[in-house]
Length: 193
Image 1 (tube, rainbow, N blue to C red):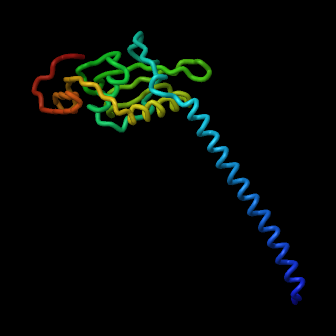
Image 2 (cartoon, rainbow, N blue to C red):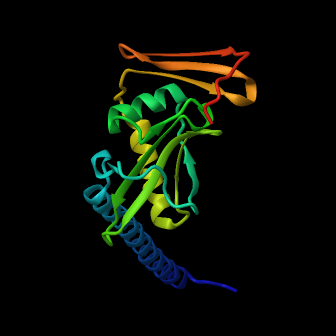
Image 3 (cartoon, rainbow, N blue to C red):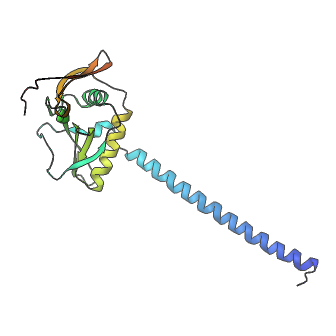
């Protein structure tokens, strides 16, 4: 097939015009998507939960039986407990069983004004957040996890308990802002169950 210079030039003009339109379309889609994402971030920022949105419920010692572990805190137990005490005060309960050392029952009001209950506790897998296995609870748990992990606050405390699987005594706490943790073999574990 032969092209003369004019035909080739016309074809190039058409291809260039099409490419400009495609580039414009790509740029518009890109701007729209980044604008939409920016809009979501702004609205999330305006409606984002803060630590003060989570309230301790002192009338409960547990949440519904069909609740489960939703997420673990990525913190050492001694730091997690110090942060929880700084943020929420005394736990709903504390035991000498290290695998059930403490529990905080917290709630946050959702947009539908229903309370979402969460339990922050020391369990067999370490510090964790439990609740109902639904989207609202999972989102609230992830938000609470992030807020606890990013907090700089810690409270002084002392905890003494026992890790039954290893026959060990745990002594941990924070004194003058400095964390400590000690685990030692214990021949006689008191009956606290």
